[in-house]
Image (cartoon, rainbow, N blue to C red):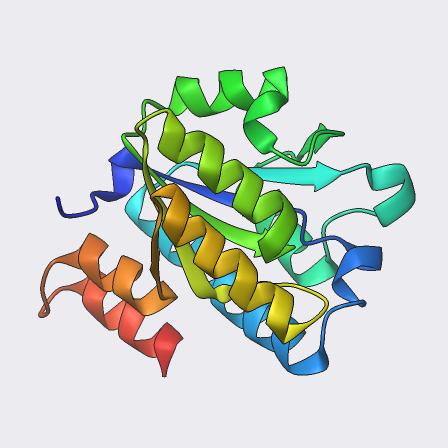
Length: 185
């Protein structure tokens, strides 16, 4: 297993949208918002490319406000999709290829549907795929667990937000380390 390098790791935020997000359990919503926010801030600071999808935004609404604000500052426009698997959306597939990333970190909703199907497709393409268990949600905890198990079985690594951001850093004693340490407290 190779170390994650920010510029070679694409962060993919899947469907954290207004009408979908409110269907998640309250604790799961808070966890996803917090950890996706941390991941976006560290990605921006360290230069990791970020892609965002929105499943049928006319019906499910845009990305939730707190994340949408961060994405606007980062000048990232969400990619609309109708397919559950993000890689089946041509615009997304082209955008991901353009990043040149050798690894992909997946976060978002719902774990057992869009996150799983995207993880399965990426792993089948031999992309080093990571799913952050503390930054994904489903409408039930059982479905989130099923989704994480399916991601593992498909070949993705299931880990946590802090695992990724500290792997990106590689060590302490830098301004980047201080920045990340404040975020994760």
